[in-house]
Length: 266
Image (cartoon, rainbow, N blue to C red; front, side, top):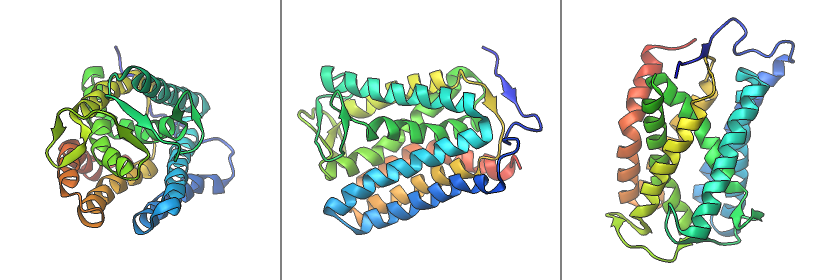
């Protein structure tokens, strides 16, 4: 497959849009970061509310940035694929126990479709956007992009699942093998995430690559990585989670950080 890249003079601009629109993704990014900081300091229903709020603002930050920098058609394609995939793989998981294991969602996350809260595919989609852009800075071939993108998404789940299980948003009915330091989540879940995320990354990489100013998704990805290490190690007391997630994501985060520092696009 040939790699399609458009980096012409209007690849990241939206014609005659008002100048203030460029700040919209930054507003949603700031709300996401602020909400996640407060999330770690509160508990109970307030934390549940902030979970839904920050997933929504993160999703809107990714969506609005994609629209402003990559256009309507590309944005509709990317988020249709990622939302549909996230929902379908979770429906498959909850009904067949493949690929994540035997798990059940509680009713804490609100509105659900076929047993899957709508926040779940939004979370898949919101994170897939910065991950795919970072991956495409490092990998050129479809297989390399699929593996690195899938690895980063699955590594993020090493942080995500322990926090969400700790809040009672979903539970596993059977565990089997687990990772040392992450006792309440089966190893099958993380292997299932890796398999699923590689498939999603491969599909998303079929879209044309467009070079743009990606400061917003870059900021979100950097924030997610370092804030999750800090939250897991210090505030939640789950040092094992911090180590597993920090090392697994760090395998590609640090080469990517070097790339964007040494070879800035703008």
